[in-house]
Image (cartoon, rainbow, N blue to C red; front, top):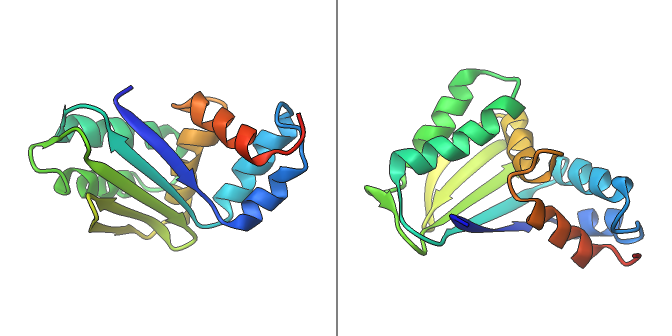
Length: 151
């Protein structure tokens, strides 16, 4: 794995999912829909060194097919990621993506890189980790196992 990922959501998201069976399609759909409608944070921590352009491109290219808005929003997003990386994302580099109705905020190693003011882009970012083609099925599974009280 290039990076480890964690997802942080408000208690309301956990409450919406908690009584559903973790293996049900409803649990995943409810998790996804409620996460996209709330303020969610995704934290990525690099496990090894990757060039700035390669890392920024990989993340932006994961979001692009899920986003129906302007291509300029994807470009702005990619540039914010790249501008926060000096040469390469080294082991331990952190990327924080805050998704909300206001848009998608990018923070690299604790330094704010800006916000792309697009709720659609923020929702597309959530889908990178929560839709049927998620880049980290293990994250989805872990979230459901930790939130759902029913087997």
